[in-house]
Length: 230
Ligand SMILES: NC(=O)c1ccc[n+]([C@@H]2O[C@H](COP(=O)([O-])OP(=O)(O)OC[C@H]3O[C@@H](n4cnc5c(N)ncnc54)[C@H](OP(=O)(O)O)[C@@H]3O)[C@@H](O)[C@H]2O)c1
Image (tube, rainbow, N blue to C red):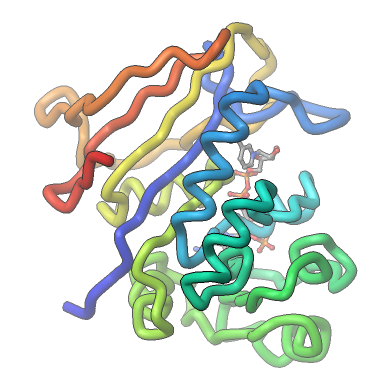
């Protein structure tokens, strides 16, 4: 089997397991101190992956925010921020989205074989469009990223993407931040959907760390024997 990057899943959720509200503006689950922690994780990564749903709904920039962390990356011969990666079946992504227009790092779009030509027409000027197969499998994406030099991959959601990395046993570490409120609306996206997860009542995941960060809590799970405590 080909190699894949060390993969860290990062996610903030409400007490009742939602990643966002059902409608309106992006829901703030984190706090300033936790956003700074996430920024440090980003700075230590070679690439950040989000699903196309997150690109469309949140329009994230996916940059390292802290100037000192950006400078430290540049001093190591890297771009100030990691490469950005997304996956899509339909390739209906706006080339003007922040994902594509903000920051100088490479942008990679893994799309289903059937839409590669469309995706190249639409996004070829702003991103590297990669044929991800039909269907796109996260293992293939991970292995291709490794072949492109990505050794540390941060996956920032959303739930459809997290579900696939977890059920395919492609995650080495999970950072789950729990915000102190409920969403209470099943139209909102959950942290994960249905699936057969390698960690279940018969095989419990290892809780490696619990950290209180202001009014949120970070739960850090070791999901493979490659887990590295820093
Ligand atoms: N709290 C947090 O930490 C956090 C982080 C990120 C996102 N979010 C929230 O999560 C929500 C979005 O999550 P989501 O679960 O709806 O969407 P998502 O996981 O961000 O993206 C799903 C989309 O990604 C593409 N995709 C996923 N797997 C694929 C595969 N195997 N092959 C090809 N394409 C694939 C498809 O795009 P196409 O439809 O283009 O084909 C699919 O519709 C938003 O509300 C956002 O605010 C929260």
